[in-house]
Amino acid sequence: MHLILLLATSLSALLLPSTPTLSDNDSIAAAERLQALPKAIEETRSVLMKKEEGLPIIGKLDAFVASLSGDYGFLLHVDMQAELASEEAKKRFTDYAPKFRSAMIMMLSSYTATELATPDSKEQLQAQAKQLINELMEAEEEQAVTRVLFTTFTILKP
Image (tube, rainbow, N blue to C red; front, top):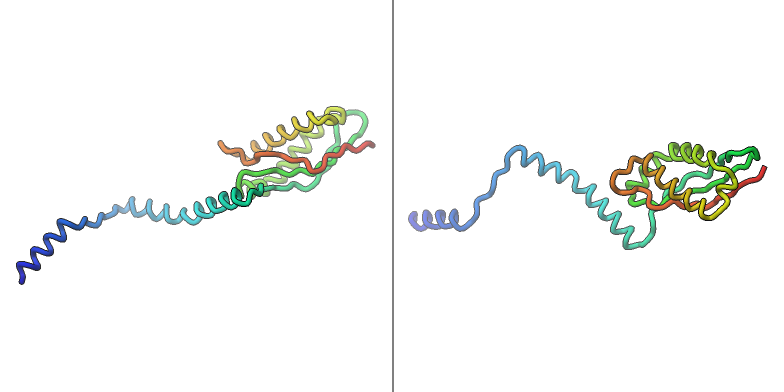
């Protein structure tokens, strides 16, 4: 009987792979990956939901008025929104909103009413605003803002 038990134990040791042991560094790395997993799952879910729904992620700035350059005292009233690459970008957009408003007012006040009157100049301004916002958000490789939208763009006469 003992011989059968000894043979069975020896065979199981040969046939079944042994359980690997983890070093302390491996254990720590595995624990860190497990902690990061819920965030990665949520980000992936967010991206998939956006793609499934087909709805853009939009960040909105409060309306603002800028004095245009020149002798005439023209004002520009702007409502601006940004199409964003992710929910994380939307959070950063909200956090950085005061910086954007200030930078946009400074940029817009350097233009004259005549310079902003054409559709081409508005498109150029959208591209400049997108670049400015991405720079202020310190967006790395991925552009956090994919598009800038002017929902109101009114030049007011004095």
